[in-house]
Amino acid sequence: MPARTLTTPEEYQALVDKYDTWLFDCDGVIWEGDHVIGKAGDTLQYLRQQGKRIFFVTNNATKSRASNKGKFDKMGIDCQVDEIFTSAFASAAYLKSVLNFPADKKVYVIGEKGIEDELDAVGIKHAGGTDPDDNVFIDLMDFSSITSDPDVGAVLCGLDMHMNYKKFAKAFKYLRENEGCLFMATNLDSTFPTHGTVHPGGGATTAPLTCALGRDPLVVGKPEAPMLESIVQTHKLDKSRMIMVGDRLNTDIAFGNKGGIDTLMVLTGIDSRADFEKDGAVAVPTYVVDALGDLSLLAE
Amino acid sequence: MPARTLTTPEEYQALVDKYDTWLFDCDGVIWEGDHVIGKAGDTLQYLRQQGKRIFFVTNNATKSRASNKGKFDKMGIDCQVDEIFTSAFASAAYLKSVLNFPADKKVYVIGEKGIEDELDAVGIKHAGGTDPDDNVFIDLMDFSSITSDPDVGAVLCGLDMHMNYKKFAKAFKYLRENEGCLFMATNLDSTFPTHGTVHPGGGATTAPLTCALGRDPLVVGKPEAPMLESIVQTHKLDKSRMIMVGDRLNTDIAFGNKGGIDTLMVLTGIDSRADFEKDGAVAVPTYVVDALGDLSLLAE
Image (cartoon, rainbow over the protein chains, first blue to last red):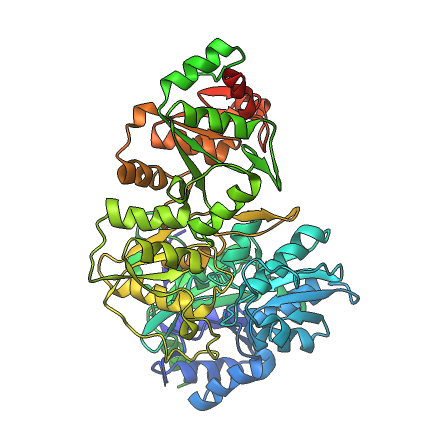
């Protein structure tokens, strides 16, 4: 079905009426760099006044939700910590609520403190991560520290600027030896943008294990379905009344499509109308508006 | 064409007569762990007496050829350093002899000293590798040390137990910014065996860059063709009179096939007759013998 472009107040009103829960990507939708895009803030405020539930969905897994909230505060955008779903929090929530991760098992983390914080928040034990013992270089061919640990029930990888061979060798051992040990990644973003350039992303720091194992991880973040499932499960939501708002086809819109919810694309970010109107488009949104701020005219 | 099984002295003699240059995989062919397999040593000695050229071909890239020779000495197998082609040496030789790597450029190394030694041996400048400045963990989101270097003309990855985010971020920057900068890997072995288990291999420590770049490296080691090309170029050999001897279809035999030379499979290692006789076999050898040592009866 082709995307439906909305331009009139009546169409905006019908959209708002149709969905109770609104999920938002931030970069390219709400803000760009350090400034809010147009009247995006006013639209969010209007949706809140209408009693809508709002969630912010980001693949960032290095910072806790509290740290992420700092950016909203700085931008002057209302936001509660439990409205933020990072791929780290979603991973923890998914392990807890969807997979019922056993209380006597632990998660081996290849990632930064953001992941550990979220596992702590849901009461899941963990190892690796920022543990100084695992943030070292081993000597060439010295595998004396790569020992078994039958209590590891999952390996969770995310962007890790402290990635190292010891962590990968340990994780590889657990995944080979421990029956049912889950191989999981917060997200597989190949790169992430910062300060006008890009650097290797969460996918890059998961790739060594994927290669060694010869199989792919369960991916929680956009565009995969588990992040949506964890939001739905955590807050007991009705998917038929949820909509995902984003600027990128291959992450945001594909995320909505894979998760079985409707999508609203804004043209203030990465992708353009031509990208979803062409043959073989990676994903097609349900609706399109020029900018999130356009809906704010309902508040006037 | 199906593999031809050789069993008689006449067949062995015809084989020996047909090839001037013999390439050998070692593990599973010449030795297993710490012992020589049967009369493999006698066969090698016989081939030398017949004036054959012999090369040993290994994907190991962490040790210099001199270190590798130590294993031959310990096993009592005759061997000269320049008969050993590791994927590290082959990478250096390939850069030098086949690609004519410019003298004013340098290679950024993600790998161990074995690679640096071989680049030194052919007079190619390098950076990264064991440089203490690049064997550190950077702080989260601190990219101050990830700066441009227009003199980097290639990035060469191999098994690196000192792999880290700084190396990958630097290499990624060079590969994006420097026109024509070559992305190269010594080998893509997903794992390597040691002491009865396996650990992440050279492919695993190349994977972060492959993921971030979204493209594959030029691979030098088995089963890819550049290692063979570097042997042929370095020693000015006639490929029609060369044969590759090995025990694994997906590395050794595929290596011969891709390189356009005949192959001899021995059944003393990983793969069995069933593996190449089945439909959809990954590679099929030209000849098969039970063991390399079988040819030694020609010497009796």
